[in-house]
Length: 317
Image (cartoon, rainbow, N blue to C red; front, top):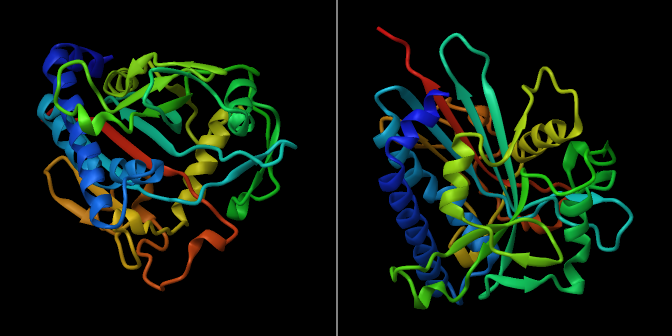
């Protein structure tokens, strides 16, 4: 795979740069939240990753891939999330952050990769999931058959994901709330990933997870939406559709009414809002600006914050 070759030839500097960009995202979140009344919570970190950090990531990808690929990244932030109703009380949220890669090489069909993350805050690299979060763990660990709830037009539809065990496409995103005290010191990083289990153990730095995701060595490959044969792929496309029609606000992150919930970053470094780029799956985003002052926590639809990455091999001139 051509992208694997390109990334491998720059792996050390790329890893360092991605790690630095994630550290900057974390610190930016802290500074923004303190200005707005308090330390950040999990949705505030996700808000920065899906809105501001995507621009940094696009620039880094451009540096190492621009000679052979064009790059586009769209980030969308949603606070209220759809639920998976499998009979538990309460029903768990499906995820906090969805990352999707659409990868194209000349003359070949596009390939798609997916990574669905549930954020967990902990100062320790190993901890036990509390009893209040076991319903969420069961979803990612066993994938019981579920019905969509608080999922707008998908409400009541069922999905039955196989196999009934943890998979590489659904992981926990570990957020270290104490990193602010150790930022920029060697051996410390703000975000990590872990395999779903009652006993959580940090398995990989998030920067490494992202790099492996780009080369299909992490995440879970999905079908093109026109050739879906199993429910993991169907769920990922469902979530993209649901998110397309969702608006949100997050006051602690400074995202009040009127904020741009979409940031599109293209190869040329021009950052466009409200889907003006026409680039990516979210080019026809609905309700791009939360400008009516409503409290969206009470509506019947949620969306998963999403980072949609497009990497396409350039045509040979």
